[in-house]
Amino acid sequence: MAGHDPDIASLTYEEARDELVAIVAKLEAGAATLEESLELWERGEALAARCQELLDGARDRITATRGSNDEVADGLADAGVIGIIPADQEDNA
Image 1 (cartoon, rainbow, N blue to C red):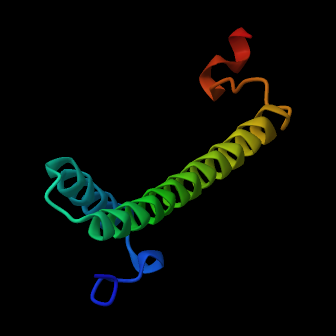
Image 2 (image 1 turned 180 degrees about the horizontal axis):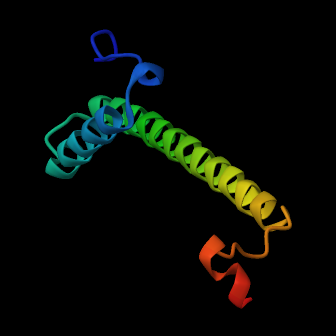
């Protein structure tokens, strides 16, 4: 079975998730032998770990991006800009 399956580390999240869903369906059907079921279970565990790895990476990227945006916003707040008065209203201020 494992000989023709793609390397798990090369799978995208969607590919790993779809294969995991198919494995769960096969296991729930109960038609596999004990040995086949064990192989499916082991691959399913590895696929679930791959999905979690990819989700964790996505979360880290979002957190990093949000952190960068917060730093930019903090920098703007610290720039000392209080307000801008249009030139035609300077005399009235």
